[in-house]
Structure formats: structure tokens, C-alpha cells
Image: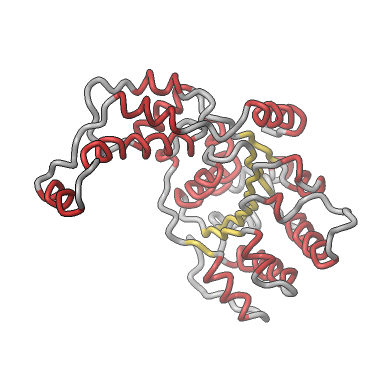
Length: 315
């Protein structure tokens, strides 16, 4: 049961900013909405769900992970996994990005980080989520790095380092953790990488996952009997989840484009009123959409992710 007592502190303007710009309550996604990624879901359950259910077991050497990193190509569902995890367990979700932590409050970023972690503990159970964490904690020490940036990174690393894991107290349900994502794990500062103890690779979807993604994205859309999702999934090897969604959106527009071609706005309105625009998608629509939409992730990128996974993953 999470606390309903408002957080008070020495920096009320920063508290208000976090409540407005970082603390999210309407996450709107569940694990069932995410195709496949069963291994990642299992590992996240182990890192978060089980310590919430039986905190007495996760003590000593079995102390929960203090931080988890989800890494992989863009558009593979990393952010959705994080939000679904928080939503599933009614966990407070602090959604942090480089823009909210550095750009908007330049000069107070270090204070903001301290207040953020203090609030997360107060509102436990909670997740402090760093999207594209490499933008916040890239490798330190370059000659061009600003002193303010170095101080911010040092404060962030210190705060993450003081985390006791999911169970910040031994009271059931009073837990917090750091969860981060990155599309560029090789840019992450070594100290941050060490603090994010559990490092989970989120790869491009396999055939089964792509077929499930097609089903999810086309839910409620009329399809001709000739539309073969299994065949489509086979032809979409190398596509990310975001790519699959884009193909579905493009295909869904095809019938309407054919129908309204060379029609005036008045004629289009009449067709809409008569229900003539609500037609089935054909297999040909998907084939055309595939020709117009190329995968966003190159095989060179995939190879680089797999190499980093082999060297640094911790599952």
C-alpha cells in the first residue's frame, strides 16, 4: 500500500516540478500489451514483483537488485516494459529524461536529483526510470565536458549508489528501484554500468513476436480472409516493434487512399456519411506498405548490440 501523505522538503519548487513533469500516474500499458519478451518479463518480475510479494526472502546475499538496465535497438519495447511493470503493481513511476533533469533546471540539477530520490523513497513502492540513460550518464572525463555536467553525473552516481535495492525498507510493499533504458549502452559511463547490476538485452522481435505485434496493432481493423499474418511476419525479419506498427499504420491507410483518389472534400464527406470508407485491408495493402517502409535498425547495429550483450549482459 503506497503512502498518501504528500512529500514535503526544503526545495518546494523542485518538488512541484517533479510532481508536474516527472511523476506519472496514468501509464496505460500492461505486460499483455507487449508481444513476447518473455525472458525480460521474467527477469523484471524477479527484480521487482517477487521482492514486493516476499521481502523477507530477499535479504542478505539475496538482496534485490539496486538497478536494472534494459538495452537494445530503438523501438523494441524497453520503455513499454518499464511502464507496464509499474502499472501492474500500482508502483509510483518517476519518468526522468535528460530534458527534465538538466536542460530545464540548469544550475539546480544536483539538488533536483537529491529531491527526486528522496521523493521516490517517500512514495514507495516506486520506480525511478531513466529513459536513454546514456544522455544523463555518458562516459566522463572528456576535455569538452562542462564542469556542471561533471557535478551532475557525480551526484547521480552517488544517489544510485546509495540505493539498497528494491526493498529500501523491510516493510512489505515499501520498495523502490532504479530502472534505465538505452539504445547506446557503449556510451554509458562505466560507474553507472556497474551500479545497474542487472543488464537485460531487449533484441529485435522474432517471428512469433512479430506475428503477435501484427495481431495487437490490427485489433479492431477489418481484414480480408487473404491477409496472412504468419506470412507477413516472415517477410518482416529485421523490423523492430516500432517498425511493425508503422507498417500496420501505412497499410491501414491504403484502402482509404484508393477510395478518395481524385475525390473532392464534399464527395469524401458523402462517402464517409454512407460508410463507404470502412473497407477491409487486403494482403496487397501490406505488401505495398512493406515496400514503402524500411527497417530502422541495420544489421551492423544488431551485431554491435550482440557484441556488447556478450561482454556486459547480466541476466
